[in-house]
Image 1 (tube, helix red, strand yellow):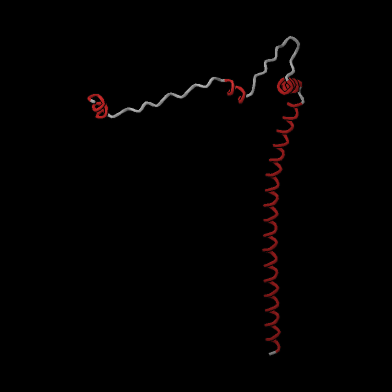
Image 2 (image 1 turned 90 degrees about the vertical axis):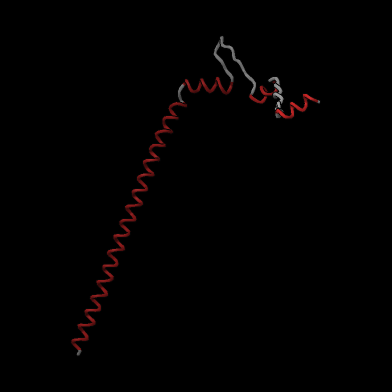
Length: 122
């Protein structure tokens, strides 16, 4: 009977140990998959940031060019080259105030024919 008890206890210990090892194995696989998903998300984010960085570098090159600086000076400060004439137009609200007011056309309501006949014979 002692031998049977030792065999049963040994089998239970082995079974519990196997369950713990299999559980640990699956948890490890789950962590690895989660890590892979995080890596993929980070790669996508990195690609987006690299694209945005390229766009910002292009904008920086454009804004540092002489043509851009000259255009900004002309548009924002109203500066001009020698011999040029600067024409400054008022804003839209001022233009609306200065524009003549055109009255709306009067609405003509058409009378039904029977009312026209009555008006004719009165």
